[in-house]
Each structure stands twice: as C-alpha cells, then as structure tokens.
Image 1 (cartoon, helix red, strand yellow):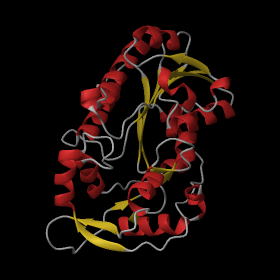
Image 2 (tube, rainbow, N blue to C red):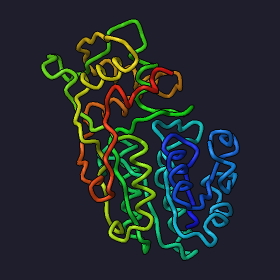
Image 3 (cartoon, one colour):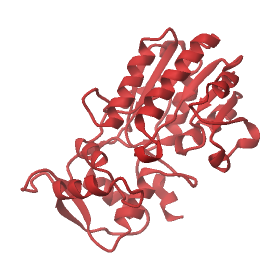
Length: 306
C-alpha cells in the first residue's frame, strides 16, 4: 500500500514509518528541507521535499496513493515566525483532504489529541476543527486521540525527556501545581500515558481495518497516574529521588504569558492550562487492535538514562 505520510520526521512520525516498513507498506513522506536528517529511515522511503503549504508537492505524493496519514502537529506556536496551530493543525488538514478527494484517495487517518474541544486552547480548538472538517468530507476517515505519548525520542522532542531536562533535572524541588491559594489537591491531575510504539501500530493497522472507518479512538494506557506519581516514576527511572513542593499555578501562568513567545522559556500558559486539566481516557482501543500495551514504568523509561 502506498501511504502519503505528512509529519513523518518527528517523534511519532518516525515510529509510524518504522511500522509501515515493517508490514510492507510504501511510505511517501513529506519532509521540510531543514528536517531532512530527522527522517531516520529516509533511505527506505520516497522522500518529498517541501512544505504543507505547497499543493504541487502534495499532489505528487497523492498520485496513485492508497491512503493518507496526517500526523503534523505542534506543541507550541510562534506566530511571528509563521509557525501556528491554525496553519499546521487545521489548514494543512483542509488542504490535504481537498486534494485527496480530488485525487480519489479514500482512506485518511488523522492524528488528533485527547481533550480537543471548540472552546479550548488554540491547540485544542484547531485539532477539534480539523476533526470536524474530516468528518464532513467524503473520505473513509479514522481519527486517533492519544493521551500523553512517551517513548525513546531518538533525537526529537518527547514529554518525559523534556520534563527531565526543563524541570526534574534542576537542583530544586519539582512543582506540584494547584489552582487557587490552598494546595489541597496539588499535583492531583491525572494522565493515561501511552507508548509511541503502540500509537504507531494502531495507526498502521487501521489502514486496512474496515471496522475502523468512521471511528474516533481515544488512546490511553491502562494506568491512570496523577502528576506527583508521574514525576516519581520518571525520576526513579534515571536514579533520582525527586522532592516535590506545592506550587500555585497562577504566577507561573502570568510569567509564561509574558515570556512564552521566546523559545527558551520552557512552557506556555496554554500548556499549563492543558496540563492542569489532566488527560485521561480509555484504553479499549488496544483490544480492538489486538495489542498488549506497553506500561508506563521504570523499565519502559530506561531511555531517560541516555
């Protein structure tokens, strides 16, 4: 099967490429020129150099394609540089859906996110609008909504390695964020971490799974962990016993609101909002795709020792 993959050189994308190749599919991957070295198995793919705004490159990728996987995503935007959620989460989907319909490519798999909603952060809203656009198309669509994705980043960006670098690796206690003035429920927001390999396997298995057409799948691991538990497991994985301290989130949000336009500031106000919402969901997807999910534990986090 010829698969046009948009977003193949990042963290999740490279694992999707691995799975596509493993089962004998033919990945055609869009890669921005500056990211060419980030596609780990480029020699086994058909690489199309360009940007998601260029319709000529997209048309070339879709010619005689059997399916589309749209996995382009941002964790933060920089509007002054033209890097926005609107452009990559929504406009890119709109463009590829339209061109897929024109080219007669019916199958379309979309990477969304758990917790998307219309009245949310720009990240959540643009993901939600992309879902609605795809659902109203003529394509045979499947949408995946993963919770927090973890796994060896292999040179890219991943939640646990970034948390270790920007917060847990500092010589200060880790913050247990809370709203308001009283730290009654500090660090109690929860997640269902899901391993990147399991996410990639579901994406690729859905390509030829007719029962997956027209479905939205939540993707969460079998363990629901609150923030303080998450910190403890991550720190233990690389041999640390990290102290924690309650931290009111409001002043940190205020600082982020002023500084998150700078890439060196580690977190944005919107990321803090989503963090405090938590991110839990069902793990039933793995039953349908016949997978035994990898657990979020010290063993599966050994890549943090690199």
